[in-house]
Image (tube, rainbow, N blue to C red; front, side):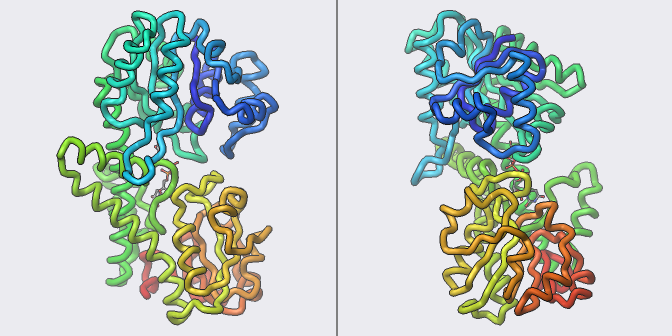
Length: 438
Ligand code: UDX
């Protein structure tokens, strides 16, 4: 199959590269000349493990191309995927669809044969209908159809998520779209990945429902963690105790500083906006958002409580800035409200992140950036683990303690054991574990 992928952001680049790796011919197109020049020179615009090698392999085999020329990209294409950004619209929480619609208009004027237009971007229910309307209005070739095919990729594990999906979801209203998408994904369902066909609207909404449900699991376990702290129970054991029940499932039950990233915060808000538009209550999702926002803002209090309630003049070392490991993404990262509050309280913050520094610096300008994890301990009153990067899992705690002025280890990801920390002479506060209460 010949595929054009509009947008070389996270979703477009990973999806396009993986499609090429299945053996399809893929042309990725982007308006950003710098990005395309970088890709042609082998430079990735995002940090994703394994992506650069996979791009190179497929470029070398002549299956993956990059261009800024939409006409060239869609020439002879069977399917055109739209993978441009749908950020939260400033001020109102709606998904901003202006990039999607602009791409569709341009596409309508460029196509010289019918194609299946597929939305990969996360788009509110009804967007496919609007795309179909625009294509018709702008004179796209007769027979051009519109399908929805949401992605379920986790940053940092996107390639493996793409190649080993739990399911592939296709929302379509016509046979041609179903046939083309079935052919594109054939290599995967030979591997037994379930291919689920639904209506276009159902598919669009399913993506939001999936992210809202996962966000709900996280907010649920985070509130359970608070209760565990109050009653002296252990949230990790509790999570295992409920997670072994197949009906609940063990994943997404790690208590922590609250969820961040490019999807959960944006998609839960957009889902609420859709519900509002249709005048349907979504009290659970609404509460999930509120619980998460409150939680992220409350994390600094754990540090301040440990330091006797006053942050002025205190020195705090922060390990991890990105919203999760194996990405340089800082969008809605819990580190941001945490550090802002520490700084506002008068603390001096030194932070280390294995890859997030460049993205973090403009967002968190008032702190010092260390080059090595141990450096954040130098002279610190407290250390805070915010992101569970592997390289933080086996730090020499005795060495850290020796470098510190104070002795607090505040572990917002529960990657250390209290006993180990105490053996190194540290005071330990985790999340939802005995002794973690204020
Ligand atoms: C998510 C979805 O997993 C993916 O299917 C979707 O398409 C895009 O959004 P991503 O945002 O990359 O992917 O990361 P994910 O691993 O889901 O983590 C999101 C946030 O939740 C992170 O801040 C993470 O730290 C937090 N989280 C996740 C928890 O706090 N606890 C958990 O148990 C799991």
